[in-house]
Image (cartoon, rainbow, N blue to C red; front, top):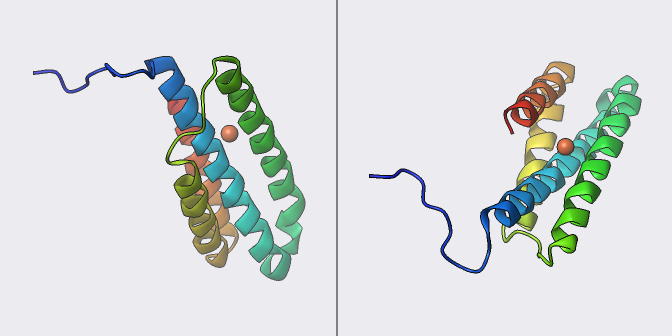
Length: 115
Ligand SMILES: [Fe+2]
């Protein structure tokens, strides 16, 4: 019994991977947006670093979106959900302070390495 089945629909696997990664980048953007929002109030010294991370995520988002468009694709259905989840994760992690922010950033970095 196979644990994974490829799509038999119109969308191929490469397009699916691009769409999911694109949605994940949007989630990461929203993590940093909410962390920056909270850090401006609680940890101002972290804001420049978080803004650098945010700029990286915007670049990643653009790379995936360019490839999706080149293949005639559309955004993932989970795009806005990833954004909302990312914003919530960033908010909670930032309210935990610098250690919460760094733990969240480290975990996201590990996910990048896996993917
Ligand atoms: Fe990224």
